[in-house]
Structures are given as structure tokens and as C-alpha cells.
Length: 215
Ligand SMILES: *Cc1c(COP(=O)(O)O)cnc(C)c1O
Image 1 (cartoon, rainbow, N blue to C red):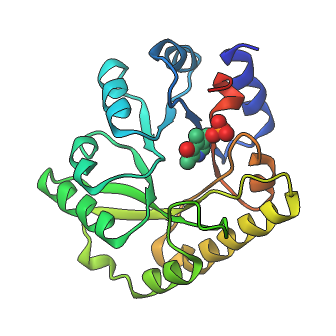
Image 2 (image 1 turned 30 degrees about the horizontal axis):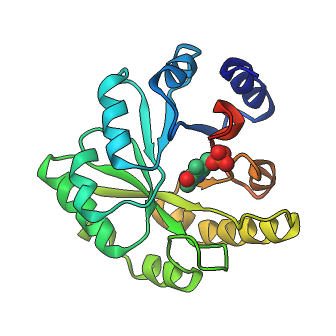
């Protein structure tokens, strides 16, 4: 299967309110170029160094999504160009993004990552912690970040009921805070589970292997 036909097939099955982030981590520039020339603009990476390099070498109208764990000392390398950071997993990280963004007078769009997997293997706030955090969050204190929604990863499991339960939980938290923060994005669903995620109200899916092939 080619990158073209994979993209086309997936785009034909999702509605146009859903943003498809093509996860290009580990894949070469040529692969991204193929998708870009096909008209695709949203790409996801999980490592700062690789992301910075690719962003330098590729057209600057690409929307770059940071989807992997982000260390605070690396925020400064991506604030100038990043489109959306999906992986805000601590208050310290959010503060640092706000600080770096304010230095260059930008507002950075972020998602709060929630660990819905129950096995504690993923980064992110726990359910309890994210609810506390958002309930007490003072938007006026952080003028240079905008919390646009939530991101989560389900367990790696063939148990569809379990995955559905985890995505349902994330959607519940999303709905709880949607109006207060004017949320726009519920980022959940990967190659193996995105259909379940879409049924649970996801409007941003992150697909790698379904588009670019195995890593
Ligand atoms: C790698 C990755 C994806 C894409 O995974 P696939 O299974 O290849 O679709 C999505 N989200 C995150 C956070 C990832 O690290």
C-alpha cells in the first residue's frame, strides 16, 4: 500500500470535523513530502531533536504536533514553530511553555495529557489530578498558553470494551471542562483503536503505521 492510498482511504472514512494527525516519527523526509504533496498539513512527532530537524527541512506551512513526552529544558527549541503540544503532563511543563512563549510574545496551543490506561505506563495526569488541576486553574495567570483540550492513549490491548471504557472516561472529563476552557480538541485514537475513539467523540486522531507503514 502506498502513503497516498492509505491517506485517501482513511480520509474517506472520517468526517471532516476530525483532524487527522499523520504521525511521521522515525519516517524519512521523503515520506512526509509524499503526504504533504497530497495536501496533508498536520504531522506528529514525539522527539524534539527529530521534530526540529524535520521542521527546518520541510515547508513552513506544516502544522507540527508534538505528541511525545516533552522535557522542560527542550521547550525552548520548539515554541517558535509548534502548532499544538498534545503532551502537557505536569504543571511545571505548562509553566515552562508559558514562560518560553511569553519571551517570544506568542500564545502556544496545548492539550493536557491524561493517563487513562490504568496501568500507569503512560505519561499524563491521573483522572483525579487532572480534574483538580483544571478546576483550580486560573486562565489569567497563564496568558501565553491556551489549553485547547485533552489527549490520551488507551492501553495496548485487544480488549475493545476496555479501550472503549478508557476513551469514554476521557470524553467525560473533556465534556466537564469544555465550556469553561472553550476546548476544541479531544485527541485520542491511534492506528489500532481510532475507530473506537471516534465512537467516543474523538475529533483528533493520531495515526502513524496506518499511513506510513510499520516502524
Ligand atoms: C506513535 C504514536 C502514535 C501513532 O501510533 P500508530 O500506532 O503508529 O498509529 C500516536 N500517538 C502517540 C502519542 C504516539 O507516540
